[in-house]
Length: 258
Image 1 (cartoon, one colour):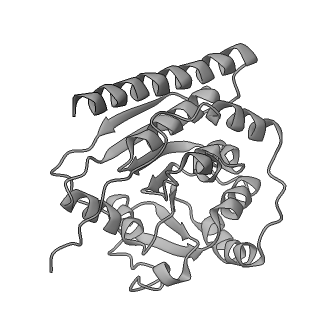
Image 2 (spheres, one colour):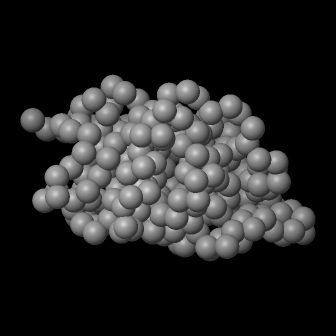
C-alpha cells in the first residue's frame, strides 16, 4: 500500500519569529512553575529506577509517536538505553511492545507530557549522551510561536540536560528558530537538508519523503549553555527581523511576477 501523501506546511509567518530570543531569555531567568501532571510523575517514577540501574549511555527520543524511531535508535546504539516519550496513549498503543529485546537494543516507551518529563529528568540530574526531537508539531501559525518547543517555558530544562541534540522537520523555519533559540544560550548549531535517499525512521519522515518534501536536520552539542547579554539579545532579535523582512520582500517579488 502506498504512503498517504502529505501537504507542505503553510504559515502566515515567513521568517524566524523575532520574539524567540526574548522568550528563551525570559524562561532561562524565570524557571517553569507549572505543577507536574500526576500521570507524568507516575510515568517518570516507573522509568527512573530503570535509568538509575543502567550503566551505559542514555538517549532521549522526545515526541516519539508510535515508537518506531525509538526502536530504530536502539538498534543503532545497542549499548545505550533509549527512552522514548510521547503524550499520546493512542500513538504509543500502536507500538508492538513497550520494551525491546536484547537483539533489538534496549528501549522503553513512556507516556508523559514533555513539559513535565524534561523538568523531572533535569531535576533528577539525568545526563543523556543524545537527545532526539524528530518532527515535532510545528505549530505554524505566527500567534502560536510559544507552543513551539524552543519558545516554550520548558526549553531551558531540555537544553540543560545536555548531550548531542538532533532535530528534524519538514519546515525549515522551525530549525531556523531553534538555531536562534540555541544561539540565545550560547550554543552553536548547524542545519542541513537530508538526502532524498534517506532511510526514514518515523512514519512522518516516511510520509513527507514520499510527498517529495525537503527534510531538514539541525545538530548541536548542548554544552555549558548560558543566556547571552542584553546587547547580544538585541542583535539576535534584529537578525530575526532582518531575515523576516528579506523573505517577505522576496515573496512579494515572486507574487508580482505571477
